[in-house]
Length: 513
Image (tube, rainbow, N blue to C red; front, side, top):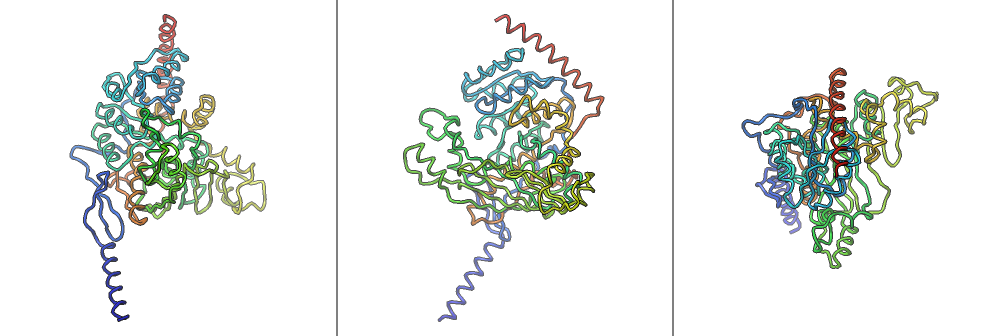
């Protein structure tokens, strides 16, 4: 009898193994994503490129002497963006749009302060549609809540506008693919506004990595760990019946790393993702929801029977070239702010949060062009202050040299927002590829749904779709585009002349009121 039971158990295990390791039937998620098991891995459908479309890798559009902008979403992030653009020569703020007209009107003050003409104001649920139809707008800058990022971006692209979208820019795979297809079809930029790619440590470290300071980078970590307890009540609510606000409600209804890009963006650039490597497979897991569930119950004064997102999410990613990325997300538990950025290389190490520093031995430091002042310097600890300062100075990123001081004055998360906006305008004015394209947007944002698929299937491995459709190896190595010095100077001269004339006109208009 025991032998029979053992045989039966073995047979059942074999059947289960076969069903998991073979190719299963196609399943469809509530988001409409089709997937199936292939050798124990969840594989999502990878749609082919529609006829007539071409890749937008390296897309460069004709130079824009003036970048005319329409802003949509003027709640928490939008007003700061409006103000920053008043400091960028060669830009004109043409239109302002928010669900609530008062919030759009308040942003006129930034234009008045800068002696720039009033912008047209749009409001209401569909106000952005009229803004996107204007022929005098080159760029639609989107800073609405997450659920509206995609429909606004879709509308803008369909009206042949370039688009810049706050994070996360797309909330599921369907939206990611639609933005990819629209960008390819209409030959317009669709950029994710991932400001953390422009922070000082990240940019200097990227330059070091590209110059071989750390050897070959084989592992990276990123995170967004930020206790949002002081902020939950300030997220926009759609009427009195909305007790949670859009961000808490989204976490309640969706599982996975719903805000991955702050951690993923900078490390993806350091690892040349879709520029010689690609994210191939992930596994994800989360803790149970304790704080999130309690927040929902407190806000609604009723029991919360299902809070989908765990308090802490961890996602492990393996790339085609055998690199490993670890991404964490936690906006619930009380702990210090931590936007971990860590690179592990064969010859060195970089880390930001909670301790910022680099680890190199004396030989590698000398090879990197810095003479150590300590005879027995080794990589068992972070570089002393003097050596670290010398390393940073040698590898200061040229973008920081260009914009850093102005960025600190203007602000926006310490200045990185201003650098991000300035680079966007610089590339448009000089007819260059943007620093981040629609494939970056899709790859960084798809972590949410892929992680959910992993968690809902026993933390199974999930294969990444290839948003580049086989062209991830076409470009070798991530890089920022620059104009020739003479061309750059000519573009800036025109930009400054336009802004001076615009300010003169704006001052007269405001004085006449």
